[in-house]
Image 1 (cartoon, rainbow, N blue to C red):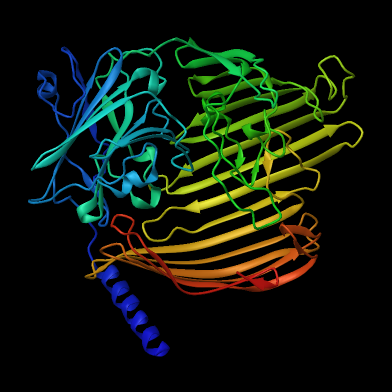
Image 2 (image 1 turned 45 degrees about the vertical axis):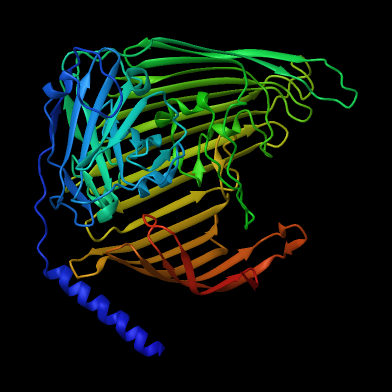
Length: 619
C-alpha cells in the first residue's frame, strides 16, 4: 500500500513538473503604474457609498494583476481604485466587482486579526518616503473589520502594533462590494506638502471565492505582499499636508493598592509624551515618567529549549522610527532591542524616568538618536541608555550604515544618589544591504559589531554575519554565516546564543502549475551547522527536506524530515522537574500533515504521521 501511495505521489509530481516546464508564462507589465489623485472640493462622508461628486471626478485605475494563483494573469473580475486628497487626509475608494451570484466572505469581526486576509479584503499600502523599503498598510473586510500595520525592509519585519487613527466603511451590493478609506496625514507621518511629491502606492484585493489575490501594481509572489520595491506611484498629492506638527499625550494614573485593611490611600502618578516635527521629515519625541499600562500583553509561549525567546516590541514610544534603528540578524543577534530598556531579564517593569528620541531623513541619509534614563530598583542600578544610528541610502533600497550604543550606570541599586557603579557598556557596528540584478532579485546583507563592558568583570567580543539570497520565480536559494565570540554581549541588544559559528543554507523550489486541481508544489532542502567560536566542537548539525502540494482549493499536503544532532554543554530545566543532562542528543524529526484552507470553514489540521525525537525522548 505504501509503495502504491509513493508511486502515485511521484506520478503527480512528474506530471506537474512537465506541465510547469511546458506552460507559457503570462506577460507581466514592465513599467511602474501611475495613479493621479484628485483634490477633494466638497465634503466626503465615509460610508462606503461613492455618491459624492468628487468621486466621479477621480480617475479610476482598474488594471489589476493576479499575484496568486497565476502570477501575472489578468483577473476574471474587475477591481477599481480612486484616490482623493485634501490638506488633512488621503481618501481611497475601492470597488471590488463580484461574479454572478457571489457573496463576499466576511467572517472576521475583530480588529488587528491576521484572519482578515482569509476573508475577502482590500489592503491599501503606502511607501510615503518612496524609499522602496517601507510600508504603512490599512486593510478592511466587507464586515468592516480593520487592521493596520507597518512593514520594514520589504516585509522582513511586519508589525501590527501600529494602531493609527483612521476610518473605513464598506457596503455590499449585488454586483460588487465597496471599501472607502480616510487616512489622516498624521497617520502616515508625512512631511509638509511639497511640489512634485510622489508616494509609493499599491492596493491589493483578496478574492475568497477564487482563493486569489490581485494587485494594482504587480507583486511577484517570491518577493512577498509588502515588497515596496514593486509598488506603483501616486502623484498629484501636493495638496496633502503634513499632519499635526505637535502632539501632546499626557496621562494621569490613580493607583489604589487594595490592602487588606481597606486603606483608601491613593497613589497618583502623572506623565506623558510629546511628539514634535523639527524639520520636514525629522521628528523629536519626549517621554516623562512613562507608563505603558495601555500596551497589549505578550502572547503566551512555551520555551522548549535552553535559549531565550524573542518577544516583539509593543510600546508606542519605542515603535516610532523603528525602521532606522534596525540592526543585525533579527531574533538572532541584534545590536539594539528596545525591550532591554524598561524591562529586566524576567520581563518585570523598570521605571523609566524619561527619554528623548530624534529620528528622520534628510536627503540620502536616515538617522536616529535615542537617550533614556531608567530608575534604580532593589537589584538594578539607575542607568542611561543611548543609541545613535546613521544610514546612507542608495540605489534601489540599498544602504550602508553604522550604529553606536551605550549603557552607563548613573547610581547604585538603591537610589539616584547612592554610590555610582563604574561599569559601562559600549557597542559599535557597521552594516549594509545591496540589491541588484534582474529587478533586485539578488540580495547581499551583512554586519560587523564589537561590544565592550568595563568594570570588575570586563568583557569584549566581535560578531558578524553575511547573508546572500536570490529571489527567483521558482528557485530561491539562500545562505548565511553568523559568527559570535564568547565575549560579545550587546546589553542593549538581543543574542540568542553566544560563542558560536553558525552556517545555514536552504534551496527551496516553488512550482506553480496549470495541472488541473493542483495550485503549487514546493520542495526544499536545508542544512545547518553550529560550532563553538573556536571551531573545535560541533554543537549542532541539522539537515533535511520538505515537500508540499497545494490543491486549487488550498488543501495542503506536506511531508518533512530532518536529522538533528544537538550537543548540550550544561544541564538545564526544560519544564518543572524535567532536567536535561549534558551530552549529545540525536534523532529524526519527521511528519506528514494535511490541512484544510484557512479561507474555508471549518479550518482543520491533521497530522497523519509524525516522529519527533527530543532530547533522548519523543514528543
